[in-house]
Image (cartoon, rainbow, N blue to C red):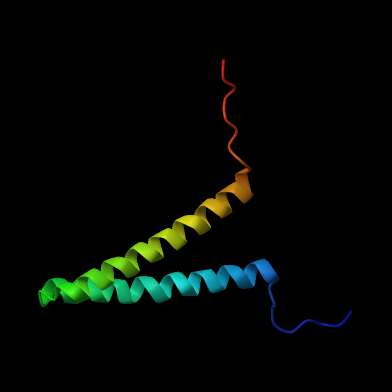
Length: 81
């Protein structure tokens, strides 16, 4: 029972930060590649940027769905008649 200095999150918090870093690490270069590819008319760089952007979007969507399910529970399907 001492005084805690600093804050250390639980495992879920650490995973959340790791996910955020991964999404940011994909989204920022994606935006740069897309803009560069559009300005310089460099198609391969533009396509790489699109691929990175899609990957970042899919990771973000997955994490958002997990958080919403955890917060509000599973969506129940209406009974079939």
